Length: 93
Image (cartoon, rainbow, N blue to C red):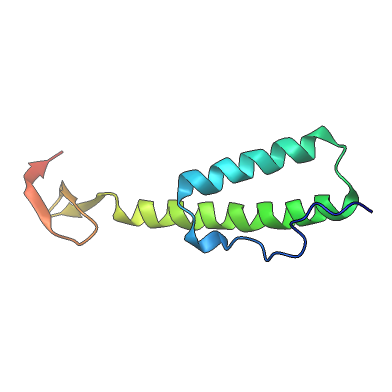
């Protein structure tokens, strides 16, 4: 079996990646796996890495959702609030 030189190295930690970096790596992995000419062991490694990246992207999206303004009902009216719960300028919807 051929060695690609990366087997001796630990995989890059996914936690340090931002969303865009993780998505880019995930797209590369999917493309490589879709070609179908990847040796089985490498395919398994790529799949595991892809799953880690997918989880990271999901977590990052959840964090962003929590930071985005939420709409809450106050006194029968909808008002915008940011994640910290501070009312913004009395905007009514």
